[in-house]
Length: 161
Image (cartoon, rainbow, N blue to C red; front, side, top):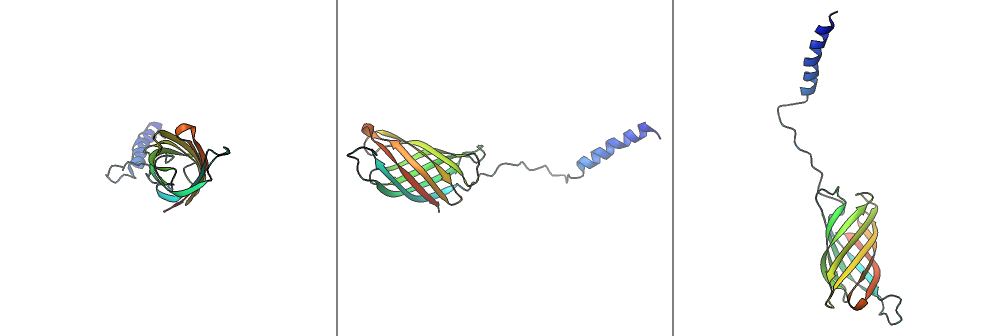
């Protein structure tokens, strides 16, 4: 048998196999989905105490809070721009924060959020939150600092709308 003849048939056959799946159209580009279980609006309550541990600390306060999550593109659905609106009497704010999911982008997973806000008391405050994100519920701590060395510590509980 002629080895050379067999080799010349191998090229057209390999080419045929490669092209067999083509139908004349260009392959469409694949892009990651821009949606996540976290995307959208979550509402709930924030409960915290100002200056916990201080003998003159006011009692804990509770108020409504809304977080809206939007995926940051090209982050494997793990990083979000988060708009936070708190209507608590002491912490009436609207701000944008950064949120990250680790180690996975599907529930249940750890969630952390940090940011700054314009305090109703005239300074720039900071906060951080760490907790667990389920498919329709988030439970996390919520801690920060405000004007005149005030600190606050508490929790936030949110459900998906």
